[in-house]
Structures are given as C-alpha cells and as structure tokens.
Image (cartoon, rainbow over all chains, first blue to last red; front, side):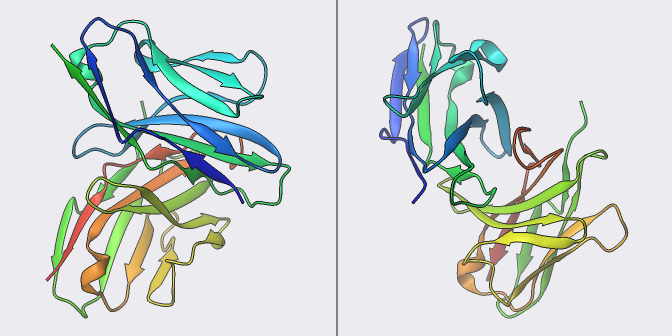
Length: 116
Length: 114
C-alpha cells in the first residue's frame, strides 16, 4: 500500500540555521513527489515537486528537496531559516505506474518553528 | 497569479441541515478536488472530479456527500445531512492535469456544525 511518513510532528530551528523536514514514502511504482506549505488559516501552497531528472529540485522561498530513491526519501531543506518559514509542511506522493489511482497520498504534516 | 476562491469562508450550521460549499477553479484547470482537514491536522482526500463526473472518491465520501459543477464555473460540495463530526476545514483544489502538475488550493471553508 502507498504511504507517506513525516516522522517529526514538530521541528525547531534557530533563525539563520539550516533546516530539514523529513519525508519518506512507500509506493509500488514510480513516485511523483510534492511539498506543500500551509500558513495559519490558509490553504496549502505548492513549494516544489520531483517528477524526473535531477534528484535535487529547487522551489519557492529558497527551499529545495533531494529525491533519494535508495532511501525512498524526499527531505525538504533550506540553508538558512527565516522566522517567516514557520508553518505546517506537508509531503505528498503520487504513485505512477503502480497499482494506485491518481490520488495524492499525504503525510501527516510537520510543524516547523523558527525561533529568532 | 490566478487563485482558487472558496465561499463562504466560515459556515455555521445546525446538525442535520444541508450545506453547500462553493469553489471557483482556476480557469484553465480541468481537475477538481475536495479535501478536508480537522484542526490543522492531516489532509484527507474526499473526491476528485473531471469532465463532469467523479474520478475517484475516498471512504469518507459517502452518500451524504455530492459534488457538481452546476454552471460550468462553480464547483460545489454538498453535505446533505450534517453531523457533528463533519466540522472541519474544507479545501477545494484544482490542477491542469492529474499527474505532473501541482494542485492549487483555495483558502478553505471552515464548517462548524452545532
């Protein structure tokens, strides 16, 4: 069965430090991977995606993520955190050519807190 | 940048009443979705809609739920007889395709069932 795991409910980082929000997935076919961010009282906002090609993908607001097929991971990273990065982050996967439909499978979300 | 718009932003309804949540998709998007989220927790898929019919639906999307695109622009979610546990944020999302393109979300409707 397809699944996405975000092992940390919350990540605390000091402003200016690098941040990592972890995501691992399990699919039967090839994954299309997405990261979204949700600010308070707002909808989810697309950050970046991995479809094919370079394993390192760059997205909005200075975020990037690295697709690691052997570790089935797609961790979100940023070299220098800002207080404004504090939000809820969701990883999602679509299983292409597997047994699934086209539905996005969502992680449970990770709350990122950046302290000044 | 085009946005998905949802109305109302907040809906308060008595248990057992019907509610209709509305969404205006981005104009060149063909795939439409409804999700719900309880208390800022996990995003739960409800249904996807393409070419005027349901493509996929989850176990949550039972007979009390329905979707339609009544006038070619609005995309609606109807909950026929609301229950207390239907209280949640409901998000509409749209996308240009169902594989590679990201889904674009509205800011949601907060549904409170009394």
